[in-house]
Image (tube, rainbow, N blue to C red; front, side, top):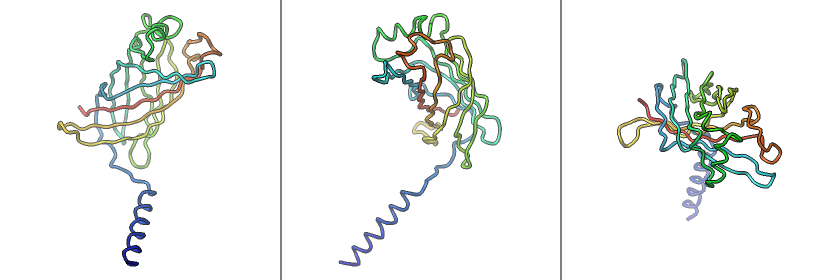
Length: 196
C-alpha cells in the first residue's frame, strides 16, 4: 500500500514539474496566409464616464500575413468601419457618424506592418506598424501571443495568434466627448489564417 502511495506521489510530482515548465509548440510554417474572417475578431474597449468599460467589435475584415522568420514578414489588415458593433444599434449609428469614425468619409481602417519581431523559438512576439483611422495615420505596436499552428481537418494549414495593444483616439482626431469617454482604446485581436 505504501509503495502505491509513494508511486502516486512521485507521479503527481512529475506532472506538476512538467506542468510548470514552459512548453513550446513548433513555430508556424513560413509562407503567405489569408485571414479567415469567420474565425477572426477585432475587439476594442473604452472607459465610459469612469463607471464601466464598453466593449465593441468590427464584423467585416480581411487581410494577409506573410510569415518569414528569417526574412521579411508582414501583416496587412483592412476593416470596414461601418461594421462596428457594440450590441446597441443607437450607439453603433452614433459611432458611424462624424462624431466618431465618420464611416461614410473613412470607410476603411487599415493596419500595415513596418517590422515583425520574433522570439528565440521562431514565433512572432511583436508587430510594429501604421494604423490608418479616421483619415490619419499613426504608429502602433501590438504584442503577439501564438495560439497554434498546424494542419486543419480539411487538408489546409492554419495559424492562430492573439494580439493586444493600446491607441489614443485623440491621435486620430476622434475627440468627441473627451473626459466622459476615455481616450485610451484597448485593442484585442484573435487572428486565424489559412496558408495559401
